[in-house]
Image (cartoon, rainbow, N blue to C red; front, side):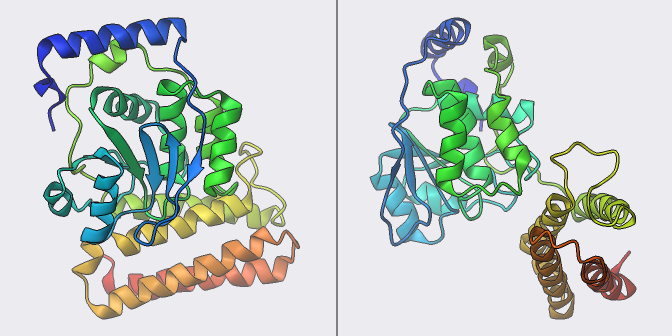
Length: 308
């Protein structure tokens, strides 16, 4: 999707407006968050006048409802491929700007703000369930365009149900810095469907979390040595679970046999049990060790048959 298609004069006006707003901080406050009832969309909110948040729309009824809200543009921050074809049937444009549960990267903040500032009509932002990454994207967009303070952004994340198990998402709201006009001008293309991380990249991320958890195991599960205080064993276990879930939802996974998908589902369940156990903070070393071994066995069972 090429944002250069905006008429030149209009684009220049937009850029000048952005530059003035970013330089002066003179963005009008629009902080009234309103939950909306819906049978087709979960966790639906009007976060600001022209910004809505919810889960990934499924089926024509969901897209029709989004269109009735006055939305013209949908921004997905989920890793899964968006349903661009159904969206088009309802006059909706997609931008696919995915990121992980560890926070919103600076370049992605710039792209989210660019998308929000240069599109006509209301915007609908979603991740998978509309609870964590989507609200984090809405937080930084509203800090840039709706005059939200840090406190308002954090309050929004709590209201939307964003888990404290993802401190990186909260950190993105707390440490938000408005993109410069120059940074926004440099962004020419926003993808309709992004090239997402490969299964290999996800495997690498899983291995990294296992390394952190092994270090926590050696420390008696009280902490992860040589990591910031926010990176706790339960946080790392939650990230491990999310990586498995992302892998389970990946398009490439659907092409594998039922046995492979079944083993991956087992890994998701084991990782979920493990992270729930750590969240109890009982420091039951034997139970934690056993739960981690269960996750490891799930990986080993799959690797024996399908790795490489």
